Length: 132
Image (cartoon, rainbow, N blue to C red):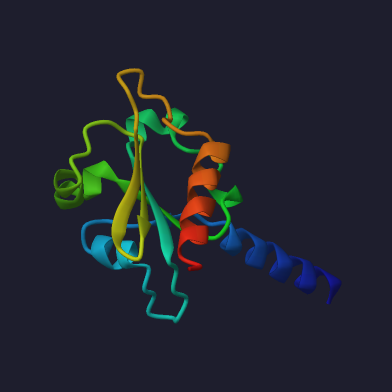
């Protein structure tokens, strides 16, 4: 019984921290923050990601508070990439209630364009703005 409980806790913990991905098919739904299971989010962060540059991806996504975070592989999402004019990866967008509020684009060095503190600060400001 002790081993079963340990296994269940490990599985639940792994699922809670699993990275969520979005592609062209679900992109607009993800941006809206509406979830079929009733978990709606006012603020959504989407990182355009490239496998060739995975070392420079935003690594602290699980530490963000008050948002839903997705990764979007640019190879699987040509329409979203074109619509949002993504030229470099990583590029990170912050959406509030479906509207793009912040954009962070990698430069020619392809390094992650924002730190956890900067991103969380912008998210916190957006959250406070909706309290009025």
